[in-house]
Image (cartoon, rainbow, N blue to C red; front, side, top):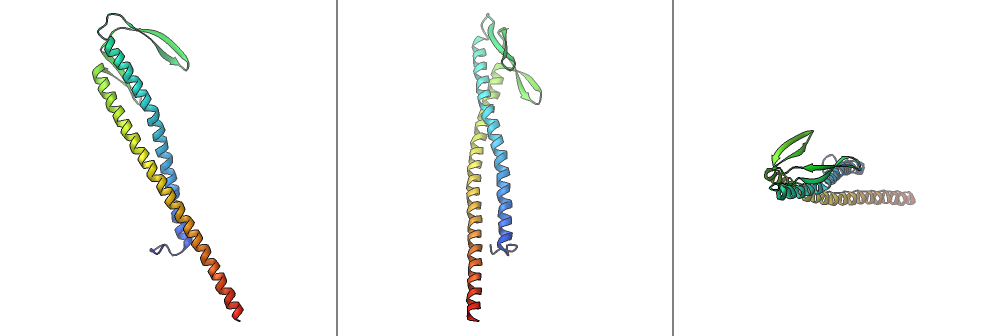
Length: 164
């Protein structure tokens, strides 16, 4: 509080409140990223399982019977001939064809990256929680000190008036 620009408790409280709001905004963004990653990881794992199954069936002469999603709760039966190629949606309306091995390597790399990012997000969220606590305690201490100063000033005024 004894730094330049922190002359009054109100100024310090305003700065702490701004800092607290920034932390809240960061927490919201990190929580959104965490939700997105938590939904992506199972999708990647499921796709990897499908690729492993296709890898086993690629040397077969019989087509693979499956169902694929057309719309919400609407599936269509399909017969997929043995192949060593797959198409992956990469995002932004982009689909690329890969060999099964290449697709598997890409998805394993993506899974590893997503898992690492999720761990980093958890660490960042833990750090933010600590910052929330520190900021809240600082605000509380400044409010208590300000209240004590007001009471002390009132007492000094009362003592002064009693002496008159």
